[in-house]
Amino acid sequence: MRIARFTTGEDPAYGLVDGAGEKVAEITGDPLYQRIELTGAVHQVDDVRLLAPVIPRSKVIGIGRNYVDHAQEMGGEPPAEPMMFLVPNTAVVGPGDPVVMPPQTSEVSYEGELAVVIGRVCKDVDVHDAPGVVFGYTCANDVTARDLQRTDGQWARAKGFDTFCPLGPWIETDLDPGAQRITTRLDGTVVQDGRTAQMVHGVAALVSHASRAFTLLPGDVILTGTPAGVGPVRPGQRVEVEVDGIGALSNPFVRH
Ligand code: MG
Image 1 (cartoon, rainbow, N blue to C red):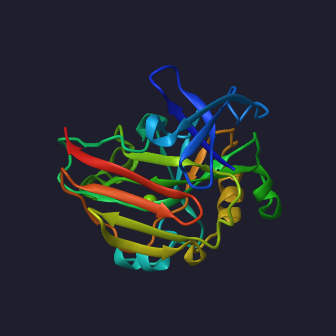
Image 2: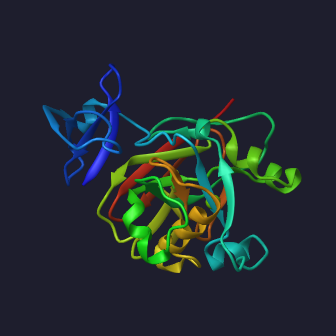
């Protein structure tokens, strides 16, 4: 099932997107908390504005250096345990929304990633039980002010600016998270081309690890790390993150 959040100009609503990504059938309420019931209204996807498919109520958990080739391009090896950081939910934007590059940074990078959306309250989840607490998956761009990441020591600002966490285009609930191709395009040119099978720590291990530190709540998001090929974005460029089996998330970058 593909679940989108969208607006037709009124209050945001949720809907089920068809396999072709052309139509969205509106549902009542929030599918994270309520049984899915169709309202009967059906829209063309092109006629609505897609929004971030989830606004995390408590947290976005990022995972750093979870692909060997990316860790090496950053000048190191992957950490033995998943390295976590937190991104405020105010950084989340949706498909097509501009990523606003603030004046404090002169080096903004894309990081295409698979994002995990948590479906229930959980704590100390065993790896084997982790798939049962996952609601679904979406695409993410873990936008990073690389210069501030180096100078701040903490990553809170470098990854937490408003608009620095695009999510979308929708949540896919049926996906093998360990067997997908992940591709990032910069103005149409492929700059990252990885496989989720290359993750050092797979999705189940990441969910379990995160849950041993934090109680996970419905709508929490885990960013699972980026493959090699990160690089700078200039104002006016567009970045598209595509995960096979989900779809593509595209955002323009603008200068504040
Ligand atoms: Mg990242």
